[in-house]
Image (cartoon, rainbow, N blue to C red; front, side, top):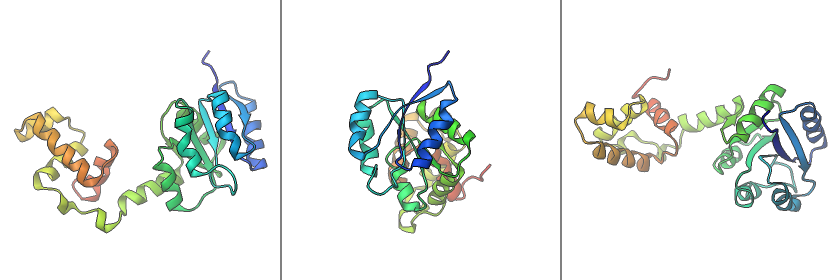
Length: 216
């Protein structure tokens, strides 16, 4: 039998905290090790338990902050973070996601979504509820004009971006365009630098936004 996911809970809202404790108490695949009652106890609790997962909310006054979330990996490298928050500020949510937070749910999510998020985030996989995904997609599809311009790419880079977005490998692209793999890689690095691409998925997102490929 797989060992249960070891969770540290940091949410000072009594109803949320009690609800999660009650929900997880009936499960054999996850267990809450402890609860963080005060912000200054977070580091101590992380060091003591080295949990697989920290479930927290940074949007509670006088409690866990974004800076605290940033420091979790430094304190306990094996601990992933799942945020469950009622924050409605899109800019604030995006700031948190840029910290490398793997999981983010709103406090309106179902039990099924919460359990899926716990399992995925504990494994180091990303899990976002629909509201958070909408915010991410809105950011990608409606970027700041000054930071998003297809003209910054050369015609060759645009061609290679399209092929990358179609899922073609470096070798296949090199063969298709009669280039060396090294040249393709050089163009790829230039595209990443110019568009500030941070993940493979963003090649597809930018290609769709530029009208180079159609969304499936």
